[in-house]
Amino acid sequence: MGTKWWAIALVLLCTLLTTTAQIFLKLGANKLPVIFLNWQLFLGIFLYGMGAFVLIIAFKGGEVTVIYPIFASSYIWVSLLSAHFFSELLSTLKIAGIFIVIFGITFIAIGSKRKSAITYTEVP
Image 1 (cartoon, rainbow, N blue to C red):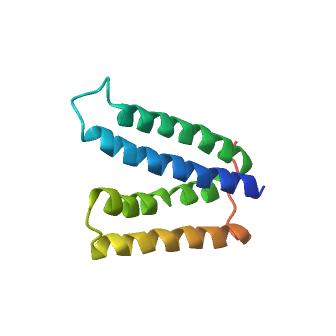
Image 2: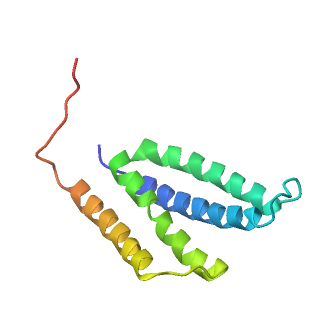
């Protein structure tokens, strides 16, 4: 089938939404147990919902094996933004993990462009 360009654009938008959602959820969590006036918490939940909606649409135009690994790039953004906004430490192992995620996404993207020798068929 192949993955359409707009599906990749949508999953990148999804990573932006969910990464932003995680930052707002953390800001909201810092204000707990206040819930009803906790606009950061509600905004985080809303952005997660929007991200899920966008991801579902992206799945329609692309292969799960391509779309979901791109979605994993949100781990990179959350790590970097957490260091910026919350002064969380980016240790050597975290940085190594970021590079491993980047390499994994790259390998999957390259592998999705090649025809695999292994094919799976449905069992009746």
